[in-house]
Image (cartoon, rainbow, N blue to C red):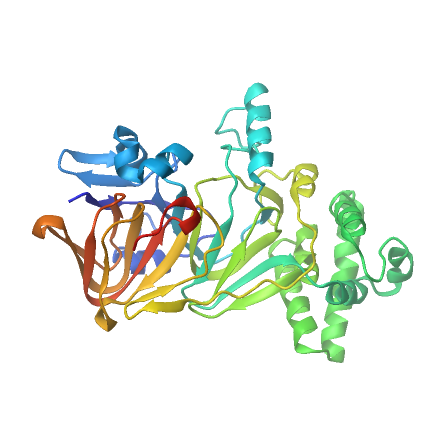
Length: 408
């Protein structure tokens, strides 16, 4: 049976929570560190370890022993590696304002920094691989995020609220219905101010937002104002604290998701979610972080379309399977509920299964069986048939149908 239990890496970033990932895994962090992300996949910077008959082996190394067998001939030829990275993300503090580059932008940036001799581990490196990073987040608990520029009318009204009597001069550079050029120039100008100008702008904006809340306002503008003030408390000298005024503030309920394509400015603020993405770690940051920020590079990759993000919901495609909309070739995500009906496959692309609740079991070819208790995960090689049994639910990360990942 080519189904391998996984041991996964926990990333202990400072913004991480202390409870959600340890509760899923059933064990606290022995050093009491924040547990920000659980990585399940074959990214070379933190590959999962597959437990084989010969011992533990990094998943990228296991796949490299026979890419066609592990990925399938089509995926092996197209990607040469597992095309997705699957994560559990737990945010107790806001993540950085960021965007991910397009495939072409990543290829060019990665080659440029390699030619310049910038080490892959350098803190000021922008591109750590040559891949793009479309991603989808699905809330496991109430989850708050910023995602994409607000529709023009909302954006303008919020900026008028923050600018106050300075709006008249500011508005000359910022049309009533701004386009991409006006928005990009204004965005770049705001984040590129001198420290003195920035601090003064933030202080004045905070005072205006507090007065607007006291005077009474609609629920949408008030939520944006309060979110901005909360970010100012955490990052008092960071212009990124004004992001809720220009980006869509999204409150996801458990099971709801959002898709974030290349160039979409976003930030996760609080909560626990699943993330599935193309197999990349390329992040261009714009604020709310002590990490490397490169404003010109970030602005050069942004999509300045102004629209509310689509909320994604899973649809039941079989008695025991709910499928989320497929938005990228590299990945697909399903929720499996075997107690409600059969969950099986006769073939298909590589997958990772994560048991989120209960106690499940994978029945494979030739009568082989693998226990899958809560918090455990397994890698399924391409073409390997299986059946999931038990009471509880699991998440299945796979490859989008356009990449030959169908067949479940």
